[in-house]
Amino acid sequence: MYFTTMTYTGLNLLRWLLLPMLIVVLASPISKCRTRTIGAAAEYRSLAEAARDAQPGDTLLIVDREHRDESTVDRLRGTAAAWITVRGIHRDSTSIVGGRGLQFIDPVYLRIEHVTMIGQESNSINIDDGGTFDTPAHHIEVRECGFFGTGDATENIDLLKMSGVDTFLIENIEMAGGSSGGSGIDMVGCHDGTIRTSIFRSMGSNAIQAKGGTARLVIQGNVFANAGARAINCGGSTGYAFFRPQNAPHEAADLLVAANVFVGGTTSVAYVGCERVDVVNNTMLYQTRWVARVLQETVDPQRFVPCRNNSFRNNIVVFDNRITTTLNLGANTAPETFTFSNNLWYRADDPSRSQPVLPVTETGSVIGRDPAVISMVDLRVDLPETSPAVGAGLPFPGVTTDLLGRSFANPPSIGASEGGRGTTSVDLHGGPYRIHEEASRFMLFSLDGVLLATVDHPSQLAGVVSGLACQPILAVDRTSAQSRIITSCH
Image (cartoon, rainbow, N blue to C red; front, top):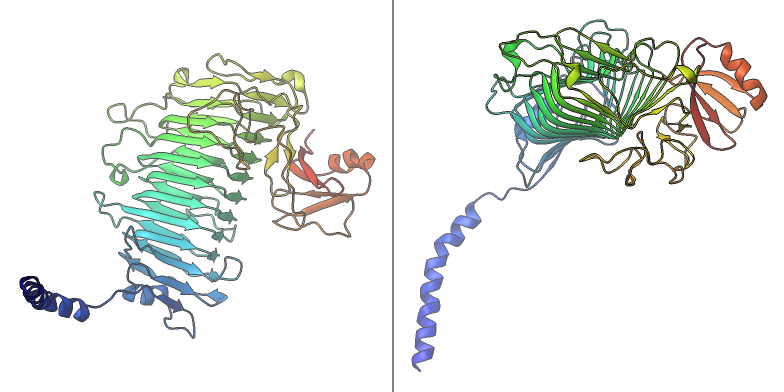
């Protein structure tokens, strides 16, 4: 009887204690993730309108095939558990055309995906910290997007501009047609980011620039085809007021450039006022003036260190007579602090002249031996097991997978791909180099995807190539479903 009475009394008391809490819970709004549509006949006409109502976890979906939008969006803020996503239906079917581009000011936990930007009059997408250097924009992802400039702009217009952005990922994007004075991705004072598995074609000043105190980046598994004067500019020249942090003693530091392919362009990599930049396991084919550059564009010994303590390791370099100076050394730099090791150097038109001129002694190099690089239709590369690059590299911290996502061996191959693993199958109908069944056996493309010539028989190949303007050429063999990058320069 005692037990029954006490149980009833306890339950009755618990009911009255919990009732107010239950009322509060039921009266409180329950946050639900929503998809907010954007388009001419959609719920919202512009991204800015949709962003004003956006809550953590929402998706802002652009539904029109061609959408004109030049929104400025301030403080679009998701959470670690509920990112906000701006996206299109599919990258190939959702385009923002023309206008002044999109600007995101001080966003956090923001994902942008499946959108293609075409022909903007200024930066296509701008992401920044709103000038609040102590509170950067952070946790930003740009995925599966396309950026296509007009290609004829001469001013400093970037396809993706980021200032004061920390903890970011850019992957599986395509950029082409950059302005002659601009960048594909231009980063000022950005930190802790990764740029991977993307393709950059026909760029202007550069494809990627990391300056203004930018640090701790990984640039891996990308393809750069005719990617400008400096495909990757590791550093640069920044006004003092724009450095993040304000007291940074370098333009860039602690960058890893690994397992990328560079074809054409004036130079592959420029070290500019940077330190601790490692360029490792890349494949560099037919640059037009220098393989790499060492420069100091901001000279202030009281503030900035000279370009120093960088490395160039495990890279394949194939060049021709257009390269007369392997490494361009500028004033006020410290090239004697650089490390060169285990690179393969091959001058295709005269292998006996493959020896590079470097500021320090290189160890473990391979000189004058054809690496036999196999190129695929999307300009990714592979190596046969008989290549002299196979097993000739040295392991490097953080470089564990190759361009094709396979593990490097120990010791690794030199170059962007681990050799002898079997070439990945190639889709001859995709990408910018479109092969059709009725085509001749060989099709010759420029790096911009222009069909230059067709050849019916291997015996005719050399004659046709020699008649083309001096440039790298993608020669596709439909019979073997493989291709090689060759040069028509003599």
